[in-house]
Length: 169
Image 1: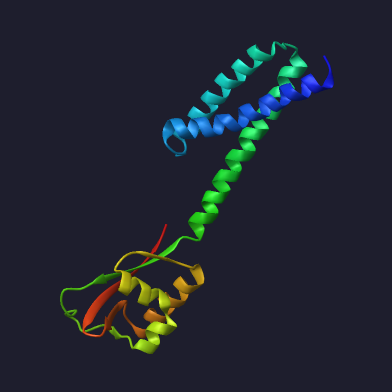
Image 2: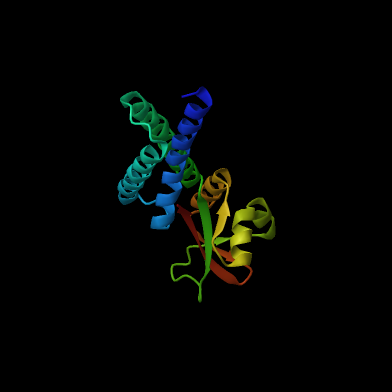
């Protein structure tokens, strides 16, 4: 067997590792451990077996190398996916402003001026959009610290009162 044929067979097994990840994600409509890991391994073994049958190479050395190549591809793409998900999860910070129907009973609120709203654009965006707003982690932390220092997460802007909520994913 020549080197080109062998290289193409290993490329096929590399592709099997990658396809196993995406196919199992498609079948489950997303990757949700631990069940998805078991399905991913099942899909991998099925595709690996089909790959061995298609290439018609049964030597022990080839099977071990093909397994190493395909499993390495599956492992690397899975690890990369989960690392990216953890990184995105860590940086996910949100601010929400809920309009209150009446003034707070305890009169514990912060009156925000136009200048303060300009200094804290995340609060202004949450109030004007009346929805959950994704913000940078540093802006999120700065806004929490400011309202905590003022003594309340309930704010008054104009004649309306808002309860400011802070969330992470």
